Image 1 (spheres, one colour):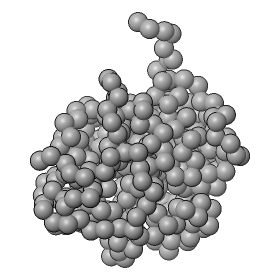
Image 2 (spheres, rainbow, N blue to C red):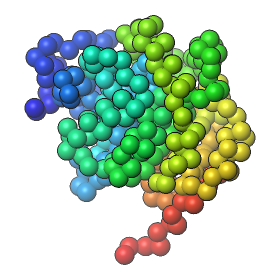
Image 3 (cartoon, rainbow, N blue to C red):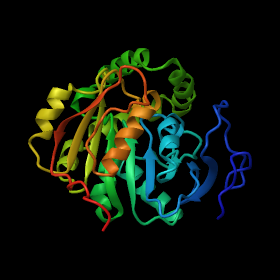
Length: 304
């Protein structure tokens, strides 16, 4: 079925649920229907021969807060930013989805868009979804980009995670709350409890260590939901897989929203197998630097 504009009814013929207006995006807003669920997504124009990049959002949120980074990358990649089933403006499936279900949903969305392989970039909960996607569909993922991956022991129990989220909220730009609050309210308390249980029982570390594709992990130095970079570096050092770990100084959890210029710069360099350097066009105190590099492919020497 042909996707429609967000100003029109969704693919099922129902008028889609409205969220408060937000700044217009350079990405087109569209609808499709995957396995009987209305899916709202954003898509960039297709640059010639551009690889596909799929952006996956975090816990309780929609893809709206990912747009600042996605828009900066849309000229280099065929960009998709969906609201996963049960999140944001997309419809709710018959049963609550766990991490493997969301990975399957991401794959079915790519099927629906006619995409065979893609690079996946996620924030927070989107990172375990990417890890599971790579586990289930290793032939369909080119690279993995994990921004502020969450859901491990550092975020347990739920009361600790809620406290971390409260501290993080004070460190994010004020505009982030205007974007996040409607999403959290729509997601609801019961869905929050179920999704937290699914995340805390997901084997993120095991899945990370089994990756064989080039992988980028990006952390914020002021993120209360993440262990210290030193701890993560110690874990990463136990594997020689394709992991590049970068810290952005001054960033909290929602890096895709708060530091889009710096993050987009890092992503472009990673995708080109170039050394990570700071972005001179992103003013402020954010600074990116490598703290661990596994066996990434060598930088290309020139055109073949």
